[in-house]
Length: 198
Image 1 (cartoon, rainbow, N blue to C red):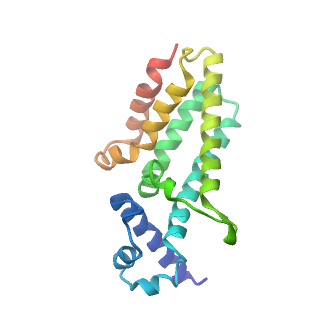
Image 2 (spheres, rainbow, N blue to C red; image 1 turned 90 degrees about the vertical axis):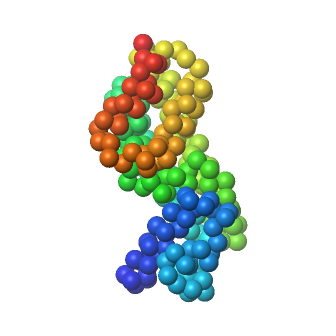
């Protein structure tokens, strides 16, 4: 693949992510994407195989970034409460650096498909990555309770609340881009964990 093709593919992915964010995956057509990047629909297929390939190329890498991040934190020697704080910081950074791709995480992943003929398991791979992330998050949260840094609350509900807020942060941040990241981290840490601390 030539450098020019790589740059074009990157542009297609970036503009597709914005369209998927604005209109949703199902309502976005190949023609919409082609118009956005300034080419004919037929020419778009010189760079991508399908709309589904675009969705997978956006969602799977961002899911892997999340997993790599939480794996690193999980393997560290930090106390569990500090691990949770670092996970929140990492999620904020990932959101700020990849707002359009992150915007697809809460809802658009349901449109991922599997194609056995191509050895392409987009849906299954994404669900595996998401489940791995959530399992580690719950495990670390339980450790923080065991270490007496968090109250013995209902873990599933607490983790759902925290992760839901972080997954939807992209929407709020889009209207508050001028806020300092350090302030955002401090405030979210206080709001998400403050009432749970012992």
